[in-house]
Image (cartoon, rainbow over all chains, first blue to last red; front, side):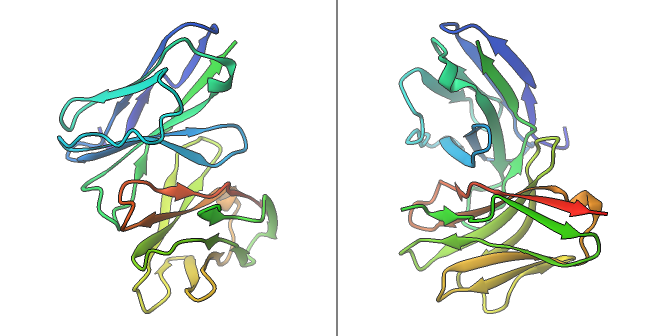
Length: 115
Length: 115
């Protein structure tokens, strides 16, 4: 596709359930980021993938959060045993090389609501 | 300390007027990039403009310009001739050469253009 695609666009789940969020980056983009945006807040960095290098997981808030990416393709963000505080929009972004001046291309996000 | 500070949670501007959105940043890295993104109600983040720390001139992209004052560590976005479609959230972001991977985002400014 032409842009970054995220699915689902909306997810409502019960506290304690696991959820999986998907991101399809722009073809050819080696760098992929996950961000969390709570209501009225800025973007909170979660994790970064660059090609086949080890991911930068420094932003993951707890061990309930994990993400995977195979090569330069799709990434999945998994949240286990969801809590109400996990409710937020989860944004995925990609860029060509991850260089200093490389701009990010964002998806439309997944709105996660934990009841 | 906050890496990016946006002190204006909400701004109003009359259609066709110019508006300045404030952004200050904090870094000790001499090499960094500054970005502005627009987030309309649809949720997608749209890249607007980039300024490198070594760039001698202020960046411009159409109706967007960046008022870069390095000594004051400010990178204000100026939107000229505001249009109704400019109503959105605007985020300032920074990427440091040293930290490499992370884009630091501010909390955003909500801009409303009044007809």
